[in-house]
Length: 145
Image 1 (cartoon, rainbow, N blue to C red):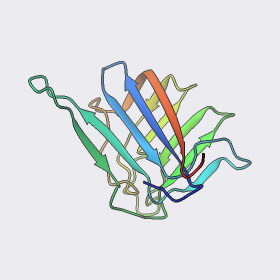
Image 2: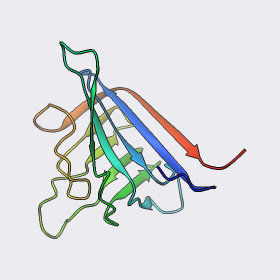
Image 3: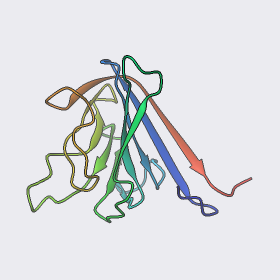
Image 4: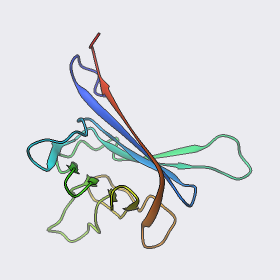
């Protein structure tokens, strides 16, 4: 966590129409800025919640939490209505897209292998495309009263 006084962070949680729960933690606020990219988010990560049918306790799989690469980017563009986590190695060709991207007014999303977070697609759908059932974004400000 980015718990220094005055620092801000965000948590994005997405429930898909297929019943999967995925999301991302950003060590920067997800707010509209003058530029489209919120910026480098080296302490950010992606996650997916795995639920076993015969087990009560879900399993949280986290990607990128031990990597502090400056290639991790959070993109928020209110004009195009898009939030995206990604920004890996575009020159090497090993990136397949954003690790997580909400688009189409947050009604649809995509997920792909992303070098910056070291993740595989976060949903079980083979093409990485999903429909959004619910989305929540929380913002945190540390050390403020």
